[in-house]
Length: 133
Image (cartoon, rainbow, N blue to C red; front, side, top):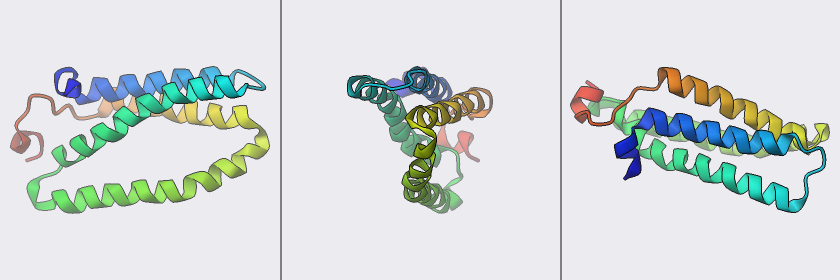
């Protein structure tokens, strides 16, 4: 319910930025302890989870009714595809060391924060037919 008061764009941009900070902090530690990994990843996962939950609200708002099901299905298919290839990519990145994995994810989250802050469509307070004609 908080996302309805704050707005989608600021919520997502802030969450990506907060995840970036947690991941970057972990990437700066050459040999992180299990406690450091657990703490930083818990913080990063918390913020990314709020985005994951919000996307299921946000995605249907962006598409007109006539193509909404197809659009949400396509977006979900891309999510599933990323879930399939993600572990393989991370496994290959581990050769460069654990901090490189965290640094890569921090960079991706930072890019997502900037793109979201600049280009995401704000749908807060708008009628669905107005947000996606």
